[in-house]
Image (cartoon, rainbow, N blue to C red; front, side, top):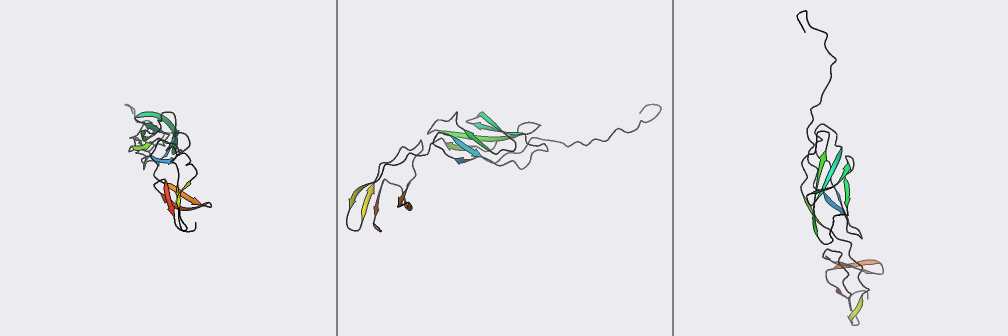
Length: 170
């Protein structure tokens, strides 16, 4: 407007206010392998802050180790892991405004799948029972929590020691 009057109105443009995205869920371990690797997954934050999530940043032991596209909710870390060591994982969402708050930390021990136990041997036996024993395998970097016992391909027991007395169907 000036002393003569007002001009025509400009074209109307809509704007959406944007903010940083919300916090993704705490990462969870989803896979183990024969090599020291950790695969984690998470869920998107409740809000993207009004701007689509472009990527996720993954932190391992406080260091940015990788990024995934905004539509991918899984990440596998192999390079920085030490077998048998505890590692701390966090995830953050990134939109056009910037990086949001990091998720709660998840502590995960880097471990391989345990080795295969040696074939069981007879420790002692009688007419109605047999006691078997075996040598514990390498633990892969994490304490072995138990053993599954199979007979003729069918699981018959879970045990926590390296010997077992069998009293039926011998």
